[in-house]
Length: 186
Image (cartoon, rainbow, N blue to C red; front, side, top):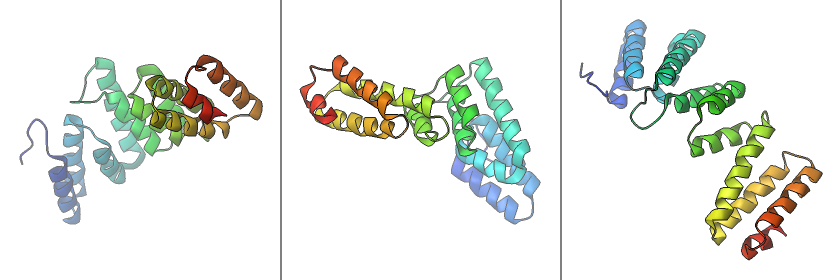
């Protein structure tokens, strides 16, 4: 009931819980799928995953890949963003990076993926962090410089001392006129 163009996710989850508690798991899953296909979200996916396991993941990923291939958008996001979030939740970072490389993602999601996969994909994470450092330094201001310096320190844990030293020297050469940033690098 009340399954209009964009269902209220809270109501959908409530109804699915009520159906499940009443022993009608198949109806609850069908209800969740209808909502997911109209307006997919990570919450709906997580709930569906509890019902269907690996088959649910495969079906959801196939659905989102088809939507991505068709160029469809879901209100404010691309299907690729949700695919990346699903792969991140599943701790399948190879797949998440593959989607990010192929289709792109929002900058915030890319940063989130980089932080989540630093241990398993340090090179990709370093690239994203380096882009973020440049953005912050170009933005300017002491707060942005401080955030960039913290990110640079974090990057030091993911590479050798020589690589880090070379990276910092490159930053010093590139941004030598940014005195407050230079103070933080020293």
